[in-house]
Structures are given as C-alpha cells and as structure tokens.
Image 1 (tube, rainbow, N blue to C red):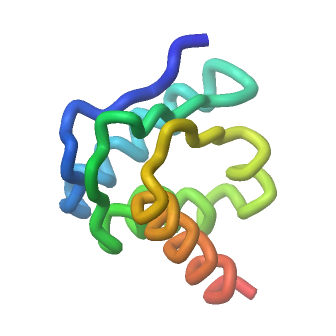
Image 2 (tube, rainbow, N blue to C red):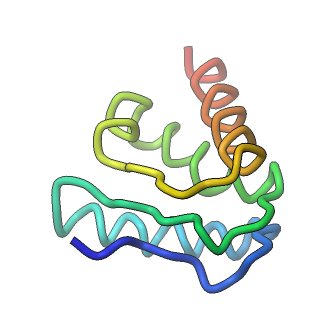
Length: 94
C-alpha cells in the first residue's frame, strides 16, 4: 500500500483541504485503510485540519476514521491540530 502524501509543506486552505478530502475519500473507497504520510508537512492550520479531518469525522464517524486512516511521520504540532479538529467535530455531533 502506497502512502497518501501532500505536495505542500504548509497546509492552510479550506479549499485545498476540501480537494484533499475528496481524493482521500476515493482512496478509502479502494481499500480498507489509507496511510497518510505527513513527513513533508511542516505546519497545518486549524481550518485545514478541520476541513479535512474534522469533516471526515463528521461525515464518516470518529470510529471509522481512526480505523481506516493511519497518520504517520507527523510532527507533534501537526498531529495536535488534527486531533483538536477531530475532537471538536466529535463533540459537535454528540
């Protein structure tokens, strides 16, 4: 399985995140799990994290996302932004 990667080192646009979420949805449709390699990502805005990961949680559910999306090589601050976005969407749905 080839890892899903981003072409940008700084992820900061809801528009870009929406496009990436569409691409990710296509990858999820092909297989059981998608590995997202964030090795090249230096920063991620809260809006990007929310639009990609938060909306994915809202659409598919937290359990689905943690089972089918594996994040690797993420810097601590990048991972923290993703976790915050996912948690906020979980709380909003509950």
